[in-house]
Amino acid sequence: MTCTNYLRQCFCLLGVLAFLFPETPAAAQRKRPARPARPARQTAVQPPSELETLRDSYIKATKEYKASLEKLLALYQASEARAEQRLAQLQRACAGPCEEQADLRREIDRFKANGNRYFAEAR
Image 1 (tube, one colour):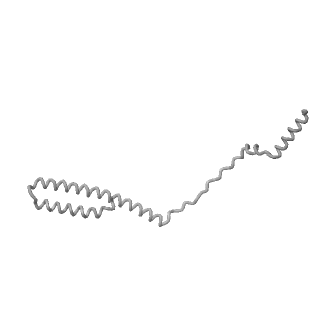
Image 2 (cartoon, one colour):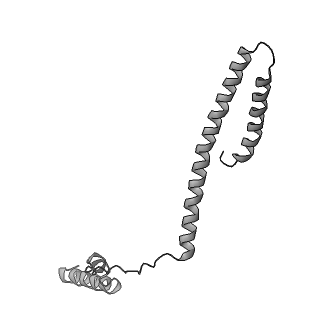
Image 3 (tube, one colour):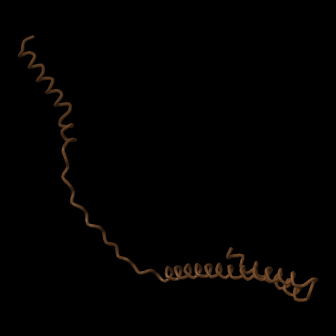
């Protein structure tokens, strides 16, 4: 094979390859021009509707109500504990059953019965 034949075959092969794959690798390597940034869309802020306002105030009032119930429950539990301590002191002071002891026991039982009914939702 002569040098010219060899060169002719190489150029022919390059031509066929260029025909089959026209600029594909080069196009993938090119950088695209940067797009200008889009301005942010400004949405109109609508004032809350009456329904949303009422809903928010209802939620706020409910949270305040439950917080106050929890505080009240803690106060009633402390009062119950003090009454139990006073009953124990009264039992030590009285040798036998006395009227004051029975009254205090009755009031403690009534308090427990009513307190559980009113403060069940706070627990």
